[in-house]
Amino acid sequence: MTSWQMNVVAAFTRLAYQRRFTTEAAGLRTLSRPKGPSGPPPALRRTFDVSTTRDHGFDLHRVRPAGPGTGVTVVYLHGGAYTSEIVRQHWALVAYLARRTGHEVAVPIYGLAPAHQGLAALEFVTAVIAAETAGGRRCYLAGDSAGGGLALLAAQAVGGADGGVAGLTAIAPWLDLSISNPEVDKVEPHDPWLKRPGLRPLAAAWAGDVPLQDPRLSPIFGDLTRLPPTQVLVGTRDITLPDCRLLRDRMPPSVPLTYHEQEGAVHVYPLLPVPEAKAGRRAVADHIRQTCQ
Image (cartoon, rainbow, N blue to C red; front, side):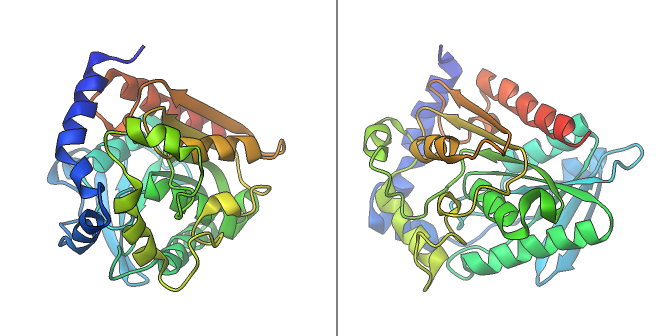
């Protein structure tokens, strides 16, 4: 049963955000919006040890909980359709994961469209993973929306568990930049947030000269056989749902998959102020802890 809070959030989202994606022109306006700050909020520094380095031309923030180190780095990749900066909801989830798991959380601030493109972001994230594993640490990849897609791409690029990735969580991941799954037609009218016309110019800017369905940009077309234990969370009022189901159905038996659909939930529901989010966040933290034992 969908909570009344979820319905309120859906109504608010429709009024406040859907206009950014309703038409191609709206998508182009979203693409051209100036970027805001991407640093951790001051409140985070009062609870955690927070540091920032400049790696490969981009900021890399680290959030360390109190206590002994665990030897695990959770690499969190934020969403925002590859054009919007990290926001407070992402930082709240980062803080929750650090506190609940006891692991350090690294947050790579990859470059955003239109100034930056997908292959450069993938190169940056895989370099972060390589540096962690070279130092003897294990990585767990997590991300939401566009960041969830990038997390899958990074796991595929480094070879999953063979490349030092212990596990993976994707929250409503953007799996196919072309959004060509015909099942999207059935879900799109019920999604109060995302629409294909506005997302298409964002996808084109992110891809540049690379085809939208290139497996280095759209992980649904990539190699799934070497992924680490994977968790997917998605709501039923979310246009990413059809491709999440396709990923579920294509996942080889050799890859442990934890898949959850939340009835009535909107895009990236574990980040939202709704009751359903509490269970979603717990599920993510539990998957990280169990996978990285």
